[in-house]
Image (tube, rainbow, N blue to C red):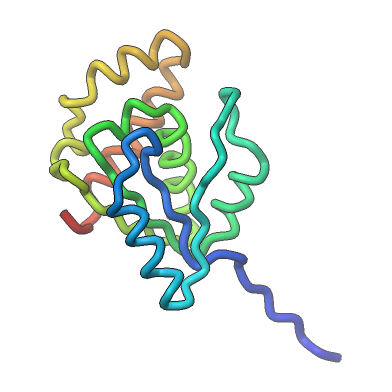
Length: 147
């Protein structure tokens, strides 16, 4: 009987803040694809408050995660939801590589620059979810990455 080898669909899940997308993210994506890395990069605008099944599947079917963290990252509840999900999968040995783009890692550890963003999110989301997002930002802020 032949053994089936299971393989995750994506090598890299690329996460970034869409509204402040920059040429850096596009160039990074192009280089990875050129090197035959299977990259999942979200191109869909979200309409509701829930991570859709295709997005969750893409996250769960990825070997590793690259997160491009920018000054406006915490403005997007979508980015924070994805970040929390990525941090959940670290327990399965899925590495996260943060890239701190025009922002210092300490900003994510201390979160002071993002207080206004979290205040705004607290109008729509519960304290438990906000604390989950804050914890994910601390985790990623403490990972050695690229500045």
